[in-house]
Structures are given as C-alpha cells and as structure tokens.
Amino acid sequence: MDLLSQEHRQRGVFCASILICAVGALSVDPASGGEPDAYFGIRVVDDQTGRGVPLVELETVNRLGWVTDSGGWVAIREPGLMNRTVFFSVRSHGYEFPKDGFGFAGVRLPLRAGERATIKIKRQNVAERLYRVTGEGIYRDSVLLGEATPLAEPLGSGMVAGQDSTFGELYRGKIHWFWGDTSRMSYPLGHFWMAGAVSDMPDAGGLDPGQGVNLRYFVDQDGFSRPVARLGVDKGLIWADGFLTLSDETGRERLVCHYAHMESLDKMLGHGLAVWNDDRQEFERLKTLDMKDRLLFPGQAHPIRHREGGTEYLYFGEVFPQVRVKAVWGDYLDPAAYEAYTCLDEAASTDESQVLRDAAGQVQYQWRRNAMPVDGAAEQRLIAAGRLKADEARFVPRDVETDKPVSMHRGTVRWNAYRQRWVMIAGQHGGSSLLGEIWYAEAAELTGPWRRAAKIVTHDRYSLYNPVHHPFFDQDGGRTIYFEGTYTQSFSGNPVATPRYDYNQIMYRLNLADPRLQRTHD
Image: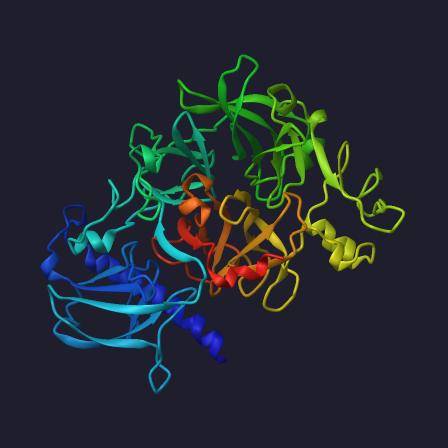
C-alpha cells in the first residue's frame, strides 16, 4: 500500500472513530455546558494569530478521533485515557504540524479532568479558516468546556444538519441568506426548495464577521428551516441563484432571483425568475422563461451591479461576467434585452463559429444580443482547437507558481476598494482535489483579462465548492475580505465524511496585503 492510500485509509478510520467518541461524550447535556471540570480541553490555535482553528483532526494511537469546533476546542472525557499521557496526531487541510524524529506529526499530552492544553499549528493556506456558519454543534466542545462563544445559538440554529451553497444579499437593512438542499437530524431527507435566514449587519447590531453570523432562520412549526422557494412544484427540486435587489416599475425595492426546476443534478425541467413576498417571507414566480434562454442565466451566479458608459448594468456569470442587462425592471424581465460577452460570430454553435479579429489580427470581444457567451471553459475549447492562443484568453488565469492554466468552476467577482481592482474568489475544477482548491485573482477591468491566480485554500481529498465573497463584510477599506464555501465529501472521492462539518458552510478571511497575493497584480 502506498503512503497516500495509507493516509486515506487512516483518515477513514479516524472519521469513523469520531462517531464513537461523539456518542460517548454526550453523556451530559451540552446545552447547559455539562460539567466543564470533567473534561480535558485541547485548543488548537493558528501560530500566526493565536486564534482557535476549526476543523483540526486529533487522533490517538488506537484511532480514537476528535475534530476541533469553531473555537478550536475539543473536549475529551474518555475513561480509558484520563490520567494518562496520550499521543495525538494533528492534521488539518491547509495546515501543518511539526514532525518528530520518526516522522510523526503530533503531540504528547497528560489528560487530566478540568485541565486545558494549547497547541499551535502552522497555516499554509493564505486565507485563514474562521468558523463553521451552518449546521449542528458549531461550538459543541466550547460549550462542554464552559468556554465563551460568540453566537446566540452556539450549537446551531434552525435545526439544520447541513446546507448547500450560500447566497447573501442586503435587502431592507438586513442580510438575507439563502441555501440550496438542506438536511435535518430527524430523517435522512431534508428539503430541496431553498432555505433562508436573516442576520443583522455588523454596524447595526450584528456580529463582527471575524466572530460569526447570528442566523435567524425562516422555520416551520417544528422549528426546522423551512422551504422559501417551493414555487408550487410537486416534483423535483428548486435551485435558486442570482439573488439581487432591483426597483420595480413603481420604484419599490424588490428582492428577486433566478430559479431552476430540477429533476436531477443534470436534468432541468424549467426555469424562470422569482420575487420575494415580504408578507409570506417566501419567493413567488415572477416570470417563466423559455429553455432556450438558459445560457443567459448561468447557474450559481452572484450578480454584479456596475455602471458602464453612464448606464448601470447587472452582470452575471458562474465566475466571470459573461452576460449583462440594464438594471431596469422591464429589461431584467425580458430575455431579449440581455447581452452576451463574446469573441465569436453569429454562427449557431461554438464549433461552427469564427473568432472575431480586427485587421491587425487582435481578438475582438464585444457585448452583443442574441449571441453565445464565451467563458473560460469555452476559451479553453477554442485553445484546444487551435482557434485561440493561450495568451489571448481573458478568463483562464495561470498559476503564479507554475504558470499552468487554472480552470475555474464557480465563484465571485467583486470590486475591491483597497486593491482598486476587481478581485475574484473561485474554486478550481481539478487540481489536487477535484473541487477543493480556492484561488484569488485580480483584473483592472470587469471583463479582464484575468492573467494570474494564487491558490489561497487547499484540501486533501475533500471539496470546498461554490465559494462566495461577501462584500458587505469587507473591512479596513477592503484590505480584509471574507468568503465562505460548502465543505463536502461530494465529488471528492473520499469514502468518509467529516462529522458535523460535512455539507456545511465554512467562513474564511483573506488579507489582501499578504505578499503572496502581489504576483496576481500585473
């Protein structure tokens, strides 16, 4: 067995052992804090900041395991281990712990009830992992140990076990949050018609984003996060994206989104636009769209509002903007008003079309109605076919370390006041993990070219997909930004999911003054 396979096998044993340890540890009521003096507490902190690090795995020689909570704590009350010196292996995605002379990365600790130990771990990620946003037991071990926690509901809110893909939009003075498929503890199936919650802005009673987000869910009669986009469908799923605020024809601010009615991951039954009903606190159908207009509404889009040449537009794209429409209610509702960003002529398909060039042979991108948008994936196909040169691509940045092209999957583009440039946070398709690598890039113009990218988060055989940068949390004039993504076993090839963390949202913080990011500015 090679070392990589052995590590994956050990990780699987480790995660299974966590389930056993978790059951044994809940012999007291965690909501009341239990008996803090009965536990030995270990806190893992970032050696650069001294802050507790979530999602650090601690494992004993006999494969008992724990994972640090959002405060960086684990609470241990294991009868066979107390009052003994125990060796713990220490590992975490994007972090490293020093190895001893035999190559073991870990620490020996004497376990005594009521005592605490702190160990430091070195961060390799450029971005700093802060906390888990959703799910059950966010600060479980902190509560058991009697440690202070920032959340109003430190063990999780909305009775949520897991949630997929975050969207956040500021509407009527509150941050409105929406997620995709949502799981519950009472049954293996949750609901599949978008969940929602609100929180307060940091300057209006909300937490500092470095501490957490106090979510107030829209719930059903049982207190479980309820669907907010059922839209009258009897079968299938509703996935919504493209959340934004826009004034309607009367001048009233409305919260709208695009929705897709799905039969499965790959089959769409229909799509359209929806609007938030403030009284019922749920979305209603606004307009049903033709399936031929799917390309104008890319899935998982996080819109950008930007003024160009005196006209305010809404821009859409799974990462980079590839579609736009005037920020006017009537145009938003009219697919014929949308423009695609393209370098292709008006042929029916990418394979049949020609790349537009000027008299000097330079590629000509332009906004055009009734055209096919060209994104990074389309550019890579054109490059492979020899119809576009690699250095002519606008949406295929190259790794600052290796100069290899990076295929972006999904993410966001936002204007950043500190960098005075557009900044991208996006996940990679491929890499050391299929959907586990997160990248940062910059461009002087919204449409690029996006030339250089730096990896800021990495995962070992685990996914962190659909990352989103929340500009309403930017601090220090934009020098500090916050983003989150879905941490999940899905698509990773890992046979074992991380208890509590899996299929939930994890928040990161990124310092744009970090020298490791400077090479993206060219």
